[in-house]
Image 1: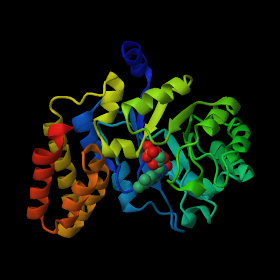
Image 2: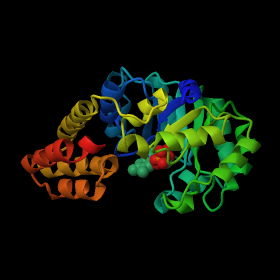
Image 3: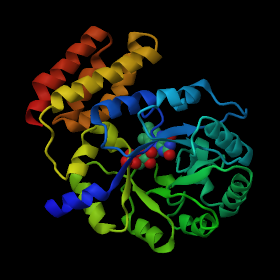
Image 4: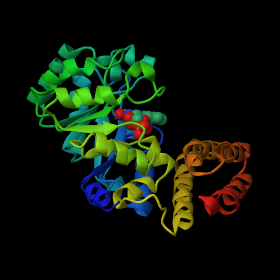
Length: 328
Ligand SMILES: Cc1cc2nc3c(=O)[nH]c(=O)nc-3n(C[C@H](O)[C@H](O)[C@H](O)COP(=O)(O)O)c2cc1C
């Protein structure tokens, strides 16, 4: 464990963007109660709907005053160079130096338009976009990609293009788009990415426990940046435990989780109208949090039943005090 601990301290942990979850409310709540365990946060993507307008929801999310205690990197998802440049200039105007490019989204309504992981199979287009972005702006570009849409070899044809530009790093979710979130990550294919790229690669995909993290670090000794998405939502203690090289939860876990939950709840109340909408939002968190508990199905059921704050609060109290944390 000791040598692992020394190793773990050198690893950087990054909060992978999750649209609908990792907005500035979440990031600040996370930082408040689990600060220091995540090195930086990617904001969920900016997307355009045919108009060159930054929606208020993205504006709020990226406003420096909403992110004072965080290191945040904005992200864009587009296959149009004008949109990319517009987003780059916008984030520069807010003081950000870097823009992450989403070539990972797997959903057909995105990929059918040649965006997200649907763009990976078009290295020439990627080249044209990067060329103009680097000529016309001074933004630092980083990438977040899957390994392809139809097969995991597609990314290998993109690497020579990326090497023409000062790409800061390439975060790779070790799946292909066609998989959506099904099946496992393809670690052999990720190894091929390491073998074929001279750039800084980050690993992403299914890091849900200290043991899994440890196995990945053994398998990929050259990787020292790791992106956590769903695992971080499900268990906010995970990055801290990875960094301290222990699978033991801190003694104040119940108290801390409870305050963290309440902060997320208050944020949901601020941005949504009506008890039902707030509870629905919290349910989406509980669908992940439930993995921390011995009986996840029961936990989700209890929250699902709640239609009023009163019932919801009772359910949360029961989950925390009676059921789960005791035999965590
Ligand atoms: C609900 C949801 C929303 C997501 N939103 C984004 C996003 O805005 N940008 C992005 O690059 N990836 C997004 N992803 C992908 C995650 O960042 C991550 O790559 C993926 O979940 C795999 O990592 P994990 O196994 O650690 O969750 C999203 C995933 C989920 C499940």
